[in-house]
Image 1 (cartoon, rainbow, N blue to C red):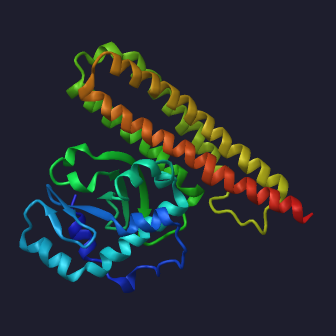
Image 2 (image 1 turned 90 degrees about the vertical axis):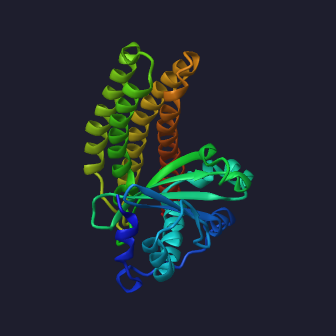
Image 3 (image 1 turned 120 degrees about the vertical axis):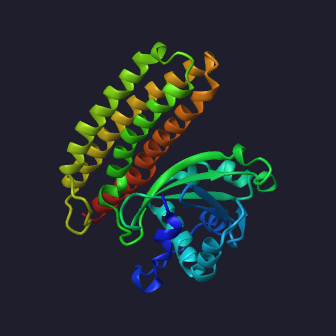
Length: 298
């Protein structure tokens, strides 16, 4: 991937205006202390909040990019944090680790073959004092998907994450071949996880297609809103079943000292836990609040 090349093509007049939005202290501090990781070919550059290149040694192209596109990087960081505030709970559920690390957030951007429009972002936190000396000790807190040209998300962004779970499963299979002592010993777990994923993709995506991609609360009746809440809850139940299976797999791997592979399963479980929390807190919590407000009006 070449995120530097794609981002260098952007200009502020082409991007949608940033929302006027009051962020809580957690998201404000994360914005102030956000590091970026941007790829240029096989090289991944780590940039400080003030866009100093921490590593590796820069070449003329990345220096020129930073000199010319600081305004784009400012825009991107604020856009990312606004998305985190509305469409995820990554900072909320990981606030303890983030606060312990002085609100340092590391955002690694990966362009999704969209001509520089859509990105997957992996988020980490790390002790500021040890970022350079012990970079490998960073803590993974989750991933998000943004479209720099369209802020509102269909179905609250759930579809993208569900599709990502299948992609990550395929990556897990590849890592298993490389990292596990005897991959065939865990065949039943991989099969169970695959079956749960197929159910989520089949049933979950069918449910989403039956729902309005964007909700207009001025037009929804109480009955319609109750049904929408129930449908999102059903998707959550499928995810909880998958999460339980992945957690059992993780525990077995730890008991077998499969330390070279288990960390990938832990990341997968983290993504599942984040999505379950998002459904509980930000979607069904928000929709239930709207439902109660609607009831009070009648």
